[in-house]
Length: 148
Image 1 (tube, rainbow, N blue to C red):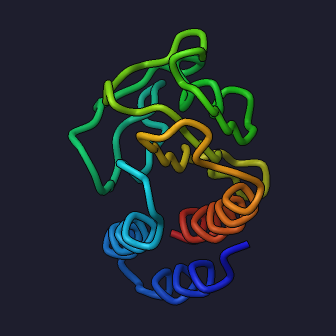
Image 2: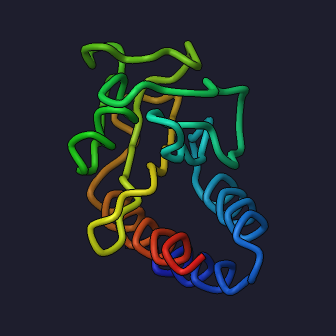
């Protein structure tokens, strides 16, 4: 686990303004990892996932539940680490250069808020260390969202 990044996120989430905190967390994620092209959030709103703060290329603005990696991770309420997104049935190619994707649901006390999404132009970019790191980060973010 990247404990340095987790500690940094914990500090950034002390910001009282939720939007400001989430923007800075996304920047911290984006600039702390090599070989990623996008990091950000999709939040549940009006029956679908709506784009939230992010760093990287222009993104899809909304995703249907159960569609693509993000919609599937949200619907199943489970982390998805996709080594080759071109082989993921129903992948939504917001960025045609994306090759691997890590999506972690934002859940606190059974309530799901959306997903944390990280993309890479490299195949098999994300391993167990990233899974553990971003599960910890998603937990911190989810608590912040629940607390308002």
